[in-house]
Image 1 (cartoon, rainbow, N blue to C red):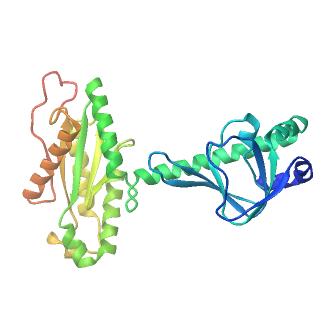
Image 2: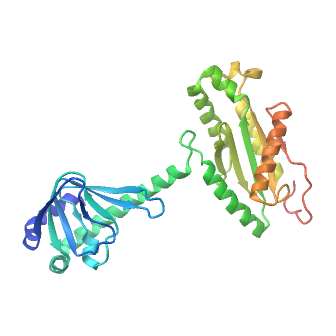
Image 3: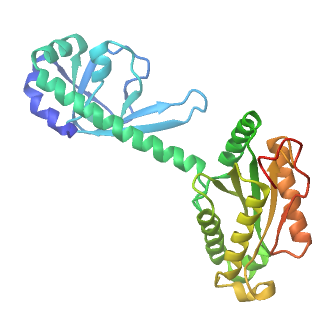
Length: 313
């Protein structure tokens, strides 16, 4: 239901309300104020804003135009305001005492039903907004992979879970070989194309549920829960072969005449006993792959600990 439809009830609301005007930037009420009035916006635009106590960052939850009703939830239950409402432009509105508004709803259940469906749509809209905001917060904007912060958070969780269940956690860190040369010779735009292409190859090669993230710059990481070292190494090799066989615009100008990647593989708890140590072990193997001539996958060679026969290397 569109908010503007509530203007159809203007005559009845006007009998119990008082018209008021506020200027642009003026606050109608603050978060935490008592819910003693309801407002029907007649003209102008307002915005509902929320400020996080932790970061002091202000978020505009929604914008209101003529016909919108605001404050009805606090007006019906008498609780404090859940957000701040302020004028974006000069506004003309109808202020209705909460007690009289509640009496009106008892007489007119049709208005109450309209307000119910209005609130349902607001919740849906806010849910979509929160989902999009969360997705942006954990996603690398260039490649669409998870970002480094989300990867480290999930790695800590998955290693803790594996320590309790006896499962394995494998990491594969990839690095595009001679990427600085690629950027210098072909420009950053083509460099970005190469990054997104390699990111897509890693994501599409992985299993459903694998955490694939941009580790930083031209490095990527794949978190493979439950994968043995051999399975992780095989995954890394499939990615390496796919990148090597893919045509890149600047590939012929690369050393060896093509774009390639190197990778380092390590597995918890065989090669490391913590999330930080697992990252270091994978990174050390990536360094060995680079030192060994690039375009290769290097895995740890430590023996599986006693009792790990159910997870063969």
